[in-house]
Image (cartoon, rainbow, N blue to C red; front, top):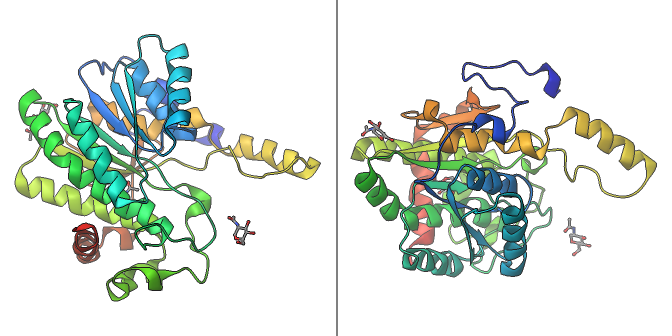
Length: 314
Ligand SMILES: *[C@@H]1O[C@H](CO)[C@@H](O)[C@H](O)[C@H]1NC(C)=O
Ligand SMILES: *[C@@H]1O[C@H](CO)[C@@H](O)[C@H](O)[C@H]1NC(C)=O
Ligand SMILES: *[C@@H]1O[C@H](CO)[C@@H](O)[C@H](O)[C@H]1NC(C)=O
């Protein structure tokens, strides 16, 4: 429960809000791409980054909804710099289109926040024939990250500022896969057996961050890659209008974090000067936390990288 959170070494805790952890941080010189910014913690992340002066680019599936979100942020943060571009993470073609549209904006890129995730329970396949959770949570972001990387490298060379890639792992209830998921529809089922064993695209995200940060270190590139767990968020826990649902939701709101708190770790890792030089780590409650042992398996991380690379190669 949030009121029991103790402050960690960073001086912040699970009770800190995104505004609190970025207070006094100047983002005027920075540009960020934030996926999944049309609702929930993604929206709050975009709002707080904009509040700190960051130029935020929001790739969204539904542009009309994205523009409405931009309006709502600008209403609260006058002068906020926000661009809305179309992107469907479950389609590689759409991700490529977004990347080239972003390039044509001629903006530098300092921060990439891979935040979007899908939460459907059914076995659904994306238009590329990949299982939807895996496609959206991992492959879509993998491709997006790869396509934006040249710009990020150029930006940190030209500006002398550290680039930051922040992967938000899906929260609480998304962690387990249902039975009967359509892994047979994936291009290379044998390459995926390790994953089915671990059963989570969340793990894939963490593994990817490890591999990415290893590669950056090897190349001497001043970009950090971090994984973030946002904590369980109070919205959408129980649906319906029954008294029981209302009761459970109010308990839920007490026990879980608000959206303002849920966006805190992401904003902290994206912007705070304390985080500089820290890469390949897993953050929770605005502090470095330990992921599961499997998540730090470097062999598995390499395997996933190779598999993902093969999947996105045209
Ligand atoms: C799953 O699919 C079934 C049948 O197609 C549908 O009735 C149900 O609403 C779906 N559930 C979710 C969570 O999408
Ligand atoms: C996590 O980040 C890597 C790049 O750092 C990306 O390829 C991977 O798919 C990401 N996943 C998510 C959900 O961000
Ligand atoms: C990375 O960039 C920061 C500025 O944001 C700088 O202080 C730091 O020295 C750089 N690190 C390396 C290894 O170049």
